[in-house]
Every structure is written in C-alpha cells, then in structure tokens.
Amino acid sequence: MGRRRTGEYFSLDDAIIQGQIVRVRCGACRRAANFLPEDLAAVYGGSRFALEPLFPCSKCGTTDFVRVTTYSPEIADFGRITLRRPGPKKLVQTWENETFTERSRSNYVPDGDFRF
Image (cartoon, rainbow, N blue to C red; front, side, top):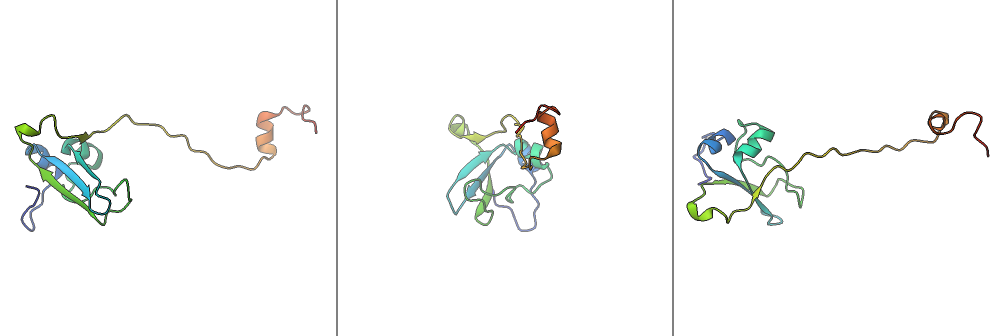
C-alpha cells in the first residue's frame, strides 16, 4: 500500500485524495504513530513527498531508522487506530542570563534608596 514504483512521486496531497493514513515507525526504538496527511500537509506543505521522514523520532532523535508508509483504512479500522493530531499551540517563555549591573539595577532599585 505504501510502496510506490521507482520514480513515482507520491505527495501528501495524493495521500489526502486517496483517503490514506500516514504511518511513521522508528526501527531503532520501535516507536510508531499514525497521522492524517491533511494534518501533515498543513504543517509541512502538501507537495512534500509522503514517504520520506518529515521529522526525527521524538524518542531517540534520529531519522536514520524512521520508515514512512501509507495505509488505506478499512471499515474495521474505525475506532481502533490511534492518530497523532495537532494540539494547541503553546507560547514558551525563554530566559537569558545577565550580570546584575547598573542597567539592571536601575530597573529595580530607585536611585538614592540603595544601601549596603
């Protein structure tokens, strides 16, 4: 199902049209996940090759052993296949280290009130 003839380009848009599910499996750590191609196309673009790893394995961090296939779900698969879907976007606050200097001191201590 996921295999294509040599030289045939199979995009995420093609997988959407055919109603397939994209299966991603890491052979190193044996982690597997199923994705809807429309979710992947929204993030990576619909013209991307559907059978190439779009991201490294979230457990072991490598793409060397990641295999991508497509699967045409059957009626018996409904309610049995777990899909990875996009969750809510999160804003992550980053922090930087700074030496406490006159510039940072002026933000917190009014002049004249600073005593040792």
